[in-house]
Length: 188
Image 1 (cartoon, helix red, strand yellow):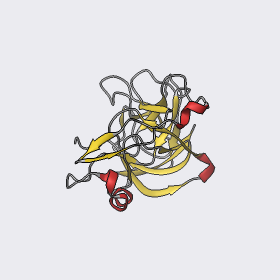
Image 2 (tube, helix red, strand yellow):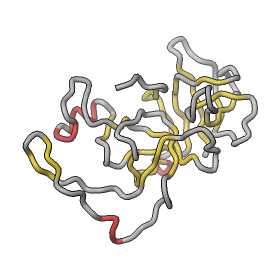
Image 3 (spheres, one colour):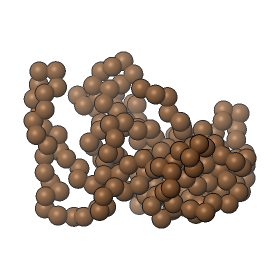
Image 4 (cartoon, one colour):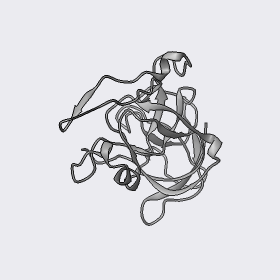
């Protein structure tokens, strides 16, 4: 598993109503702090949304997983503020750091701040978070803005900039601390 590009600290301040819990990540894994975009036609509420996936074998045990039909994907180059749904608050994983399946161990999943791929992931649309690993052409300091990364800079992740043609997703509230984290005000 590759190292995450961004780290999201547990230091957060947000309204619970600013969190969307209707979508799952289309990829098999993703890191908390990643920007996400709705995939396909977005959220369409129909009776078929309650479908279950087919039986799958997991270490000799057959079980069904409920399917979350609304998908998000990680942001890519070219996504602007209008496309960004928010920031993932959970990691998406199948296995823990010891190689054990999280599907059958909810306690370890909670400890890892993770959901199993296919489960709904919490997406923050506005609030204050502490994040690290932001690249870009501007320094990360008080008042600096951030947008979706461009090719060669961060390939769709966070990017600190002075101006952004795709629109700002928020601003930094201070300088980077000694551990590499900065407070960011997300405004989507």
